[in-house]
Amino acid sequence: MTKSILLSKEDFWAIWIGLFLLLFGVLIYFFSVPQEMRMEGKRLEKISQLNDGAPFKTVQQWIADDKQKSLKGYKEAIPQWFYKLTGKPGKWKTNPIESLHLSEVDAKSRSEGGLTSLQQYTEIEANLQKEASEAEILAVRSAFSSDTLNELAVIAISNWRDAYDQLQTSRKKSNIQPYNRLPFMFLLLVVLGLLFGIGIWVMDGKIIPFLKGFAFVFFIGVISYLIEGQSSVKALGLSYAIWAIVIGMIISNTIGAPEWVKPAIRTEFYIKTGLVLLGAEILMGKIAAIGLPGIFVAWVVTPIVLVSTYWFGQRVLKISSKTLNMTISADMSVCGVSAAVATAAACKASKEELTLAVGLSMIFTSIMMVVLPTFINAVGMPEVLGGAWIGGTIDATGAVVAAGAFLGERALSVAATIKMIQNVLIGLIAFGVAIYFTKRVHKSDEVNIGWGEVWRRFPKFILGFIGASILFSILYEMIGNAEAYTLIDQGVIYGFTKNVRGWFFCLAFVSIGLSTRFIDFKPYFKGGKPLILYLVGQTFNLCFTLLMAYIMFYLVFPHITEAI
Image (tube, rainbow, N blue to C red):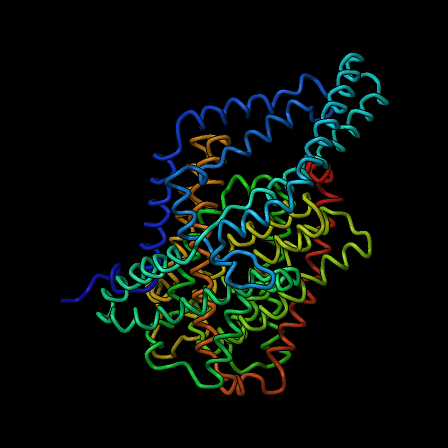
């Protein structure tokens, strides 16, 4: 009996697994977080919104915000267990075992080192809060009519907030708890193996070979996370994705990927499922926060860069493979690996072409993540403009966040939001590419390919991505900002699905490495055309994005920029 397309195709299994995890996360948090915590969040939100005519954020508002931010759903008992289950190896300096296991003695020893500074910062913070309150009272007595008193209050509050941030850092260093992640890692291996294994079993009935190989792929993923956690490596910004690919490549280009591992090398399955989970993080409310400037930067520049780069590759470089040309163009112009996978599926690019595009993206993402914020600081570029530039040009979302944080909170907010706005284009770009390649590239003189063929080639997992985004956007609006922060932002997403998504991407990157042999790249590097294509396209992207960001944020909508 023929299986339904809903059960026989990898894209649909990515949707089922992704939506199952999202709904499971919703059940965990919506039924585990006490009602009292939700009500307290709403009460504190009302306090933080009251300013009594003050031209600045008051001490009371800051305190309410601090308390509200401490209401994190993943800290409750049951959610905390799942948070630990899906967590990755921790930080370490000289002993990698510490990333997986920390004894009570070692935890106590580490905490003692921060107790002295904790006491010092506690006293400083308390004194500065008192000074901030006194300065605010003077401003209140003048009915905020004195610019001098208002400015003194703002300075005092700013000094207090700096001390508060230092105090929070000190508290973390002085309250290190013992942990043993090894049992959780083993259980996570079993759970993830079975999740994907069930899909593999239904699709082709070969679950045992998959599970054997999956253990090896997962182990390489753990090693990749472990290396990322080393303090010096972390300071350099070298993420788990790089190590996953590099380790996999070393194996595949030396001894070769073992035959028994190959059934678990499922790059697209892992990353498609991760993209469905990513949809829950891209909410329509966050897109609206930046407004029209961000939409112009993300939705106008991106398709123009993509089309121009593809045209340059075909007309100027004359790249023989149109699918390689399109995959690199989408990878560079939209959002790196995610867009490359979606586009490669839409135009039916080969695995070697996808790997080449991803490899170029990873190399230049690592470089731009460091170089771009350094350049922005060196030339004194405004923080909002720098954030918009980063968000529209650096490929990976994680790298965008890291680069934006280097500039400051405003830059981080703008960069991350623009990148999320840009990520929405993944589905639209994939759909457009599917139509173009079906109708114009792969058409036959004898056969007229209809819209049914377009649908057949369309990457179905994108529907899960869009569906998750709409579902969580509606859910977010229904329960309100206060509860959404506790249950969704610091609950379902931060405490569960974001960790799981990270593991899925890690498994995908390991699979990319294990399936990559340099000898297979030789035909695509003739004359260095793929590299030239990426360099020219990214240069155009950098220039056009910077111009559009400046026009939108500083010439057309300066009032929005001032309010950010």
